[in-house]
Image (cartoon, rainbow, N blue to C red):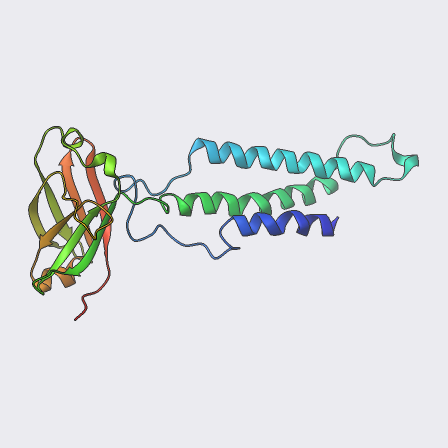
Length: 213
């Protein structure tokens, strides 16, 4: 039974984020702001189904391991036999739940803000939109400008400006973006920025990177 336990546990832990080395939500958030990467109904149902299937398999194997003379006795599970099974299920399911909560949005970030240096050598904030489907007038309800609002680590206002919408698409850049002009102090102090265009566009992200050169 211990061999079976670790055989089932090892691949689950690998899938669930390389063991217990879980990370928080990445710097740039996905899906438009502070949804916290919550767990949806589908992952929860999947974990519950996995737990039930695991219990069923282990109970079946446990019954098969019994001596032939005891096969007709004690079909009802005793507490002493249920407890190890429950512990096994908990150990298997917990990494899956935590991994689901912490990995939401890793594959696609709707907003990215980076400290950048323009072609003229001036510091700026490069505000990029990871979701091309949002880069249209329909997303802002027809508005042709959006606000770029940045705050420092203590929540203090650092920058409040407007950018043309939709964002431009330039060769050499992976995403639609805007070059947000700012002073060197604003670029350094900005810790988190928000793009507010009403309707579907209200996105937030941490400011990444450092100035070079």
